[in-house]
Image (cartoon, rainbow over all chains, first blue to last red; front, side, top):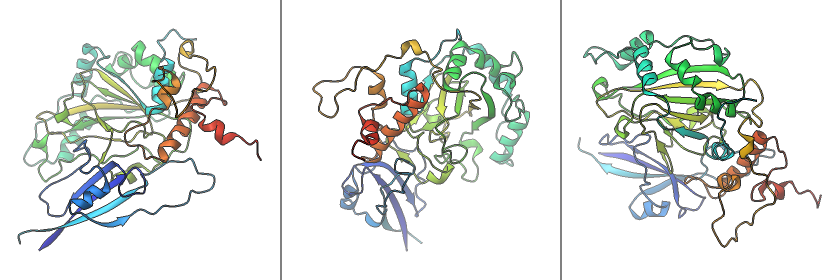
Amino acid sequence: MTRQKVLVLYLANSALDAPTVAWAVYDGTGETRPMAGDTDTPPYRTGVDALKDGWRLFQASQILPHQRGAEFDVSYLKYEFFFERLVEVAV
Amino acid sequence: MTDLPLLTASQMASFTARGFLRFDGVVPQDINTQFLAEMGDIASPQPDSTLRQAYGRLLAEAGVPEVAAGTPLARAYPQGCAVNRMLELPLVAGAICSLVGEAPTFDHHFLHVTFPPAYHAGGESVSQHTHQDSTIDPRTAFDVQIMYYPHAVTREMGGTRFIPGTHLRKVSEVALGRYQNICGQQHMVCEAGTLLFLHSGVWHGGGVNLAERTRTMFKIRMNPSQSQVRKFDLSTLQPQSAQRPIFYVKSQPPESVEEILMTPEPWFEQDTGRLEMVNRIKLWRYLTGDPTYDADYWLTRLENQASA
């Protein structure tokens, strides 16, 4: 059977070849337990580097217009890319 | 006027830009020892006891006073107790005065203890999700949180993780928990008696403790009750004679408030990193009481209504 591994990359702009500024990994196989603060170096320099390594992109954040009056507000990281990799696991 | 050692303009600019100030080993060892003694021993892990039960016993027995939110900070702790002695250290009192003014108000405190793997039967041994404390906070004014590390913290013990420069982001507590790692994140590895002053907006979280002993950190949040404007050592604030050249410069600019405020963090997105600069300038205007201040022309350009 297969299980899903998920990689989330936050890039410096909306381009998939922009540098990684933040990241997360979730492992549906249960073999590893990634968690907050577990690494200080990004797993991939850019989103394209993740594609080259076999990760499949399945979601990217939209580029949204700025709300009038709140143009200078900053909140969550904007350029979020979800990747997956399906992994065979023993029953 | 106060005779306390106030923060310098450079320290205030660094706090404005990065949201923290760190003072390593500034609390004398006798206060650290007294604090740990007042908190009491932590029971050894028991096979039939959950971590939550062990933590509950610890908090119930620790010598942390119950203090009502809104109490003047000066009356929050009994004279002579370790926390009161720490708060009365000139460096600490001066930094508090510089950041939140005279007569700050006690908000809350908490004894954070992270437990080593022996306590984690049932797979509870994980890091705390990164978060911003309290809730969405749209103010320019800010609270300060002092993190007090009464014993040495190693990397293995999973000291507080925080991300410099995130304090101006308006987010809702742990809604950002999805971000496991962020470029430029720091982990508190420090000697005993270290203090970390955080702007209340800084994103942070406790790291997983993979060592053999517990890790203890005491946090105090305080609010300004009076103005936060021009409370630092103004004798160190150099007047700004003119804007400096931007983008096309031929040499490394000298150390200055502008240089500190305009230094980006490794996690900055390319476009919102510029908004961070705008918001830093706005915070510096607030702290200096100078509504005309600018750095690298960001607000001068935006406020120019000449063609309107």
